[in-house]
Amino acid sequence: MKIVFMGTPEFAVPCLQRLCRQGLRPIAVYSPPARPGGRGLRPLPPPVAREAEALGLPLRQPEVLQRPSELEALANLTPDLILTAAYGRIFRPRLLGLPRLGCFNLHPSLLPKLRGLSPIPCSILRGDVTTGVSLYRMVERVDAGPIVAQAEVAIEPRETGGALLRRLAEIGADLVTRALPELETGKLPERAQDEARATFAPRLERGDGALDWRLPAAQIERVVRAFDPWPGTFTYLRHVRVKVLEVEPVDEMPRPHPPGTVLPMGGNEPPLVVTLPGAVRLQRVQPEGGRAQDGAAFCRGQRLREGERLAAAPSAGAAGDA
Image 1 (cartoon, rainbow, N blue to C red):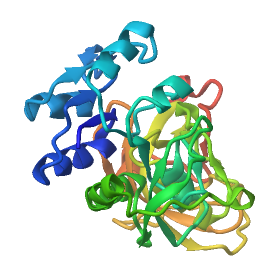
Image 2 (cartoon, rainbow, N blue to C red):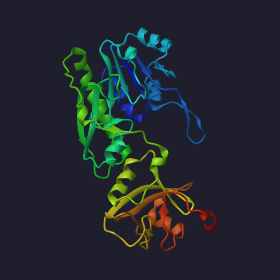
Image 3 (tube, rainbow, N blue to C red):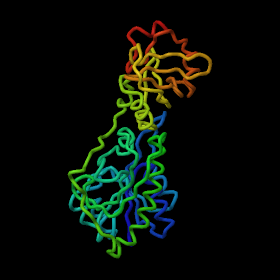
Image 4 (cartoon, rainbow, N blue to C red):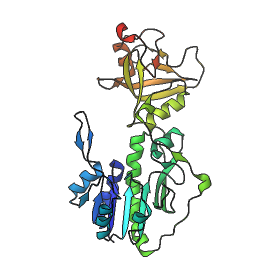
């Protein structure tokens, strides 16, 4: 079977690796061009592009996939199947009809739930206890095609978005390599998605990581886990921007303090932050430009004053008080 693989981030890498190990080596790999990244803003190739080169696979990195010249080059490969995993491109009818067996996408949710760009953090944010991966035939509408294979998994109680992504990437790779031989023989049935059950996971933006301490304690904890590693969660103490790396919900009992108030516990005990309702333990943080540290060390280093609050934006005039 002649497979063309298309992908971009780390989520897609295990699938590409597994295809090669299982004797389903792609005839070509497509990935976006290198983009500026890192502290030096040097052009960095996507993880899939790096892996394709390491595996010695033919690599194409068009800026626009559906230009006539690119479609002609793809057609000349005469692929039996195009497989995508987080490639980030919309497929139009001419491209969808190009491979003999069709175009298929690996998506990290139990479709039709959480179509869209951010299903993994959204599943944690919603407090879901299970999620999974879906392999489906691509159609013009995003994530709406008939499903050919799915695998369901439990979300661990303290699992972060990054940890869940890595786990689903491996499960998805296994799902794909088991399903493709059956697709080729026509033995794998397809089932339409139930549109009445469809939900959507919108794109996350960097600013979404600003913590709102007016949320309940359990929800604050889910936000911190869901947005790890991206976009990350942050707050401000005076003028200091602080990444919040780990919190632990304590309770959801009302307290006579405004949301965001830090209650130092003394010694090496993590401080409490008041939520609405309840409180969370501030376990690990990272001040801007500094190292990750436990919450107690942070409070000591900042010489926290009684009644000080964490907020979504720096306090006006706070820089002069530091």
